[in-house]
Length: 328
Image (cartoon, rainbow, N blue to C red; front, side, top):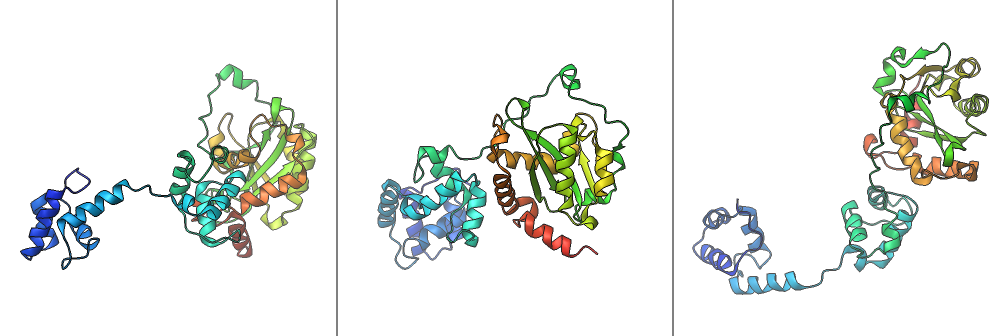
């Protein structure tokens, strides 16, 4: 197949000759060294076999190449305003595209995520400030040297390692298997608890007075009390000192806690990936003490209602309720 793009006038004249001789689109394409689809489209968009004229087709192509084409968002200011509002609300272009198609926010429209990206990058239909709201791939975390990282490790006493967690937790077929963590604010002086269900990716986002084991014990027990006892199966956590009272948490809530290996965040992938979503609303360096419980609930609700690729564009809250209903 030829690497050329636009058809030349000479090629169009060959197409006209081929039509006059009764050749098929494939026969004409073979003579030009073009893909048959190129020839067939060229004929179809210029009146078909009965009206195709090489000179007229070439003039039309030149006219279309030169015209200033409006992007979909430039041509529809109301749609552009809706997209801008969703970007400013921390939604990704993919989420915006899917929810517009579903009419989630009261507006139904068809616009691809690629169109949104292009309009933002080229400032066509979206302004500079809106383009800055785009959520881009986060930077790769820099690996610390082992001596420095060891200062973060704390003894939790006797604990059950992640390797002993029931195999069914890995299969993501039932709710109740959780992964938890603390996300910290500026200068590590504030923190929030994040907990994700592995099967549904549902998030619970809660405040804790501090990173101390006692405060985390209180906050985590209150969080787990919101979940029915039959759905409190397992909880995976890292070796942070905030979970020093993990045996007490198990005693109060009945949930089995499994501790990950040292410096092994990949053993809690749902939580690690989910925290990246939370960071859209709580960027690193933010004083998390200024984020109220009400704001935490709003962020939690938004994340739980975002269509997720990993859920085949379903939402975490819908999957959680569906799987919960099927739990015996």
